[in-house]
Image 1 (cartoon, protein in one colour):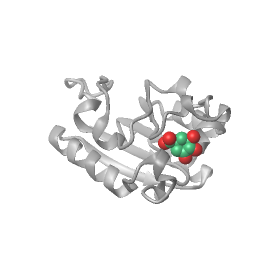
Image 2 (image 1 turned 180 degrees about the vertical axis):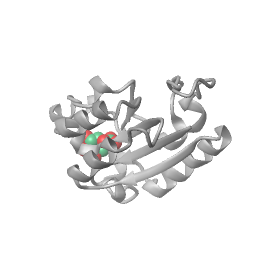
Image 3 (image 1 turned 45 degrees about the vertical axis):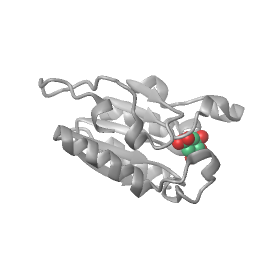
Image 4 (image 1 turned 180 degrees about the horizontal axis):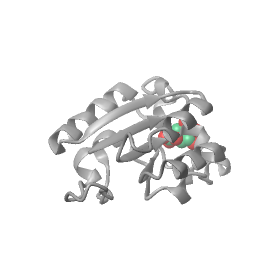
Length: 153
Ligand code: DQA
């Protein structure tokens, strides 16, 4: 099973960026923890980060047939990008939306997620989601026993 982990704008700055909100782990720290969990399950992770909306749209859109699922932290594009929402839908892949902070407990402009309606799950308030994912079954298109996301991220 191959899962693409997609991170959007400003997430390359984790560790230094507003640590009181996003924690002190860098994106590399988070992805390392996710890879360790993935290895245990025999799941392959492919990682991608871009600050550019169009690049994210292209990467997500071309994931159809190249991956079995998506995990996306679209950063601020979560609240603005219909194009990313459409790319997730167009990919035909199960997608989980993740955030480091509890967006619901923050500014009003962070309350809406354009991604939510096309994702199979959403998680927030998980500083370091690389190690702290809650239990959720991942829809498995291969017919194998579904992996639990909780086991690898
Ligand atoms: C974020 C929440 C967004 O509102 C914000 O713009 C981010 C990070 C999070 O992980 O908590 O860049 O997606």
